[in-house]
Length: 157
Image (tube, rainbow, N blue to C red; front, side, top):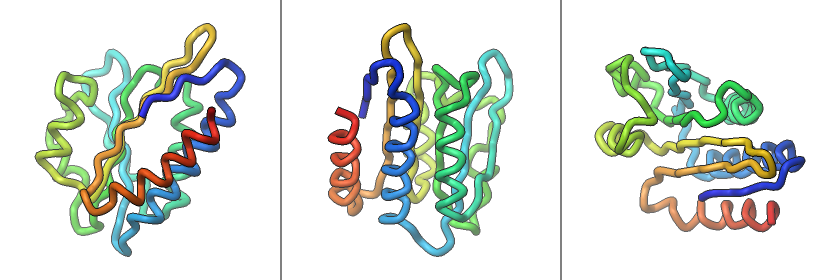
């Protein structure tokens, strides 16, 4: 999904997008889910692995903050949902992994099969901000998630 928002609507978009992702998390929730953020700072050699926590509220706060963090503009932020028994370091084993490399993050997600995942990027421009969201879901969840994202699209039109 790609959203192009006129300048001045960024705060509204952060709120609505965060809410939509929370609704997706609620629909897909398992009792032992743990949310993780993986990203790479521009020009840095190592990938940052950040366990966010098991609470949907933790996910919501981190997503909202990420969309506000100017230094992450233009970067791909990858969010992985894993069972508590599977440490993030077992999924992203190379600290040089780059979520922006060709074929990524799809290759990592296909290979490691998290419960579900999403990649989020935003790029502010002179007249509009572009937000890109890619969801990686189990087939059984697609219809439910599409309904929740349709509400997102309608609210930002």
